[in-house]
Figure 1 (cartoon, rainbow, N blue to C red):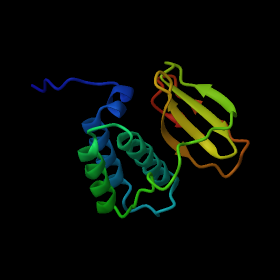
Figure 2: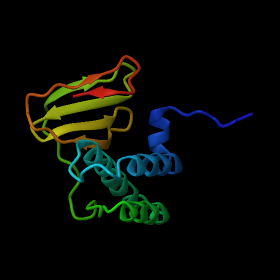
Figure 3: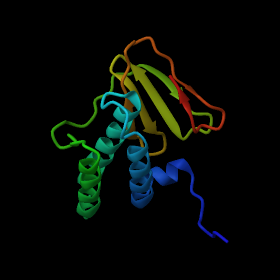
Amino acid sequence: MNMEKKVSLIEGLLDDSCFYSLMEKRLSETESKPFKDPERIVLRSAVDYRLKYLSSVEKKGEEVQKLMKLCDKYGSIPQFDASSPPVYSLGKIQQSPDGAITANINADGIYLILTNSMLTIARLPLENEHAICLFSPCSKKIIV
């Protein structure tokens, strides 16, 4: 019998080992897609934001190195240390039904932000600044 504790998506994103496992799974599943595929861009964005966060926290060097090696394995070179912290221009705001994620939609893209900590978890690029973002009733899926 599997006694593994189930965690919410948000708890999983905040936990280093859960985040790593999720990224490893998703990067391997999308490896055959083109490099500019939107799904791959979102995954790279999530890793970049995570690395930015980890590099700003003391004693997180091991996690940074682990994620860097994972990116290298799937042909990506994170640029988290070459860019500045995200600067948001206020656009349309959409919140997930459970309130855990806030989406800031503007001409730069859709920024997914953990509501309780204001930590950016990903940026979805947009081809059209008039895009809309809808969350599923369970807050686990996003339609752009």
